[in-house]
Image (tube, rainbow, N blue to C red):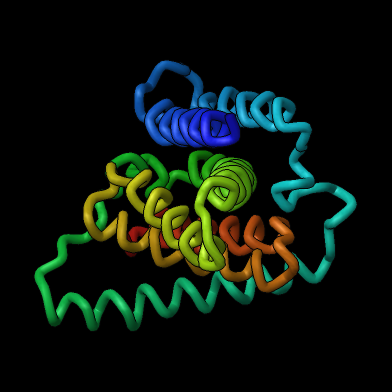
Length: 219
């Protein structure tokens, strides 16, 4: 009986992860980032079935700490500098690696209104939504179905592989960038007692820097 319940739990969780991964790319919701609302609500309902809520993922307003803003900003700068000026330049000398496909964001270049709009999305879409759903929901769901003493690192790795592949529209470089940056956001969150506010700000500030580069025409 217990085995059947465990198998059902695995199936439900994998279906939920599949929905999170594919639904945004279907383009069903006509408004920008409208899928985020649908998936966030769906995740909330899923948690209710297991008598959990967002605080069990590491997010609650009571856990907000002002230093999360500072730590997040510092982490974002360090991650960005490492990837942009060390990792990818070195890797490009070893293997041929095309630049990330940023066509989805070309409307940001030299356009102030679009730039401000995407900065807002940096925190609401990239920061809050992706951190809550990937490094909160998916990570903790995987921890519930992966057995053994290494379930945390295994869940960490799988979560960020999924997070990287989720950005497949950006090309190989974009997927690799998302995997590494996502792993860094996730590590910051875990270091600070699994408080998603830290990864939220790290992710939001990282995307802010990226959109600023696009706006200024560097990318």
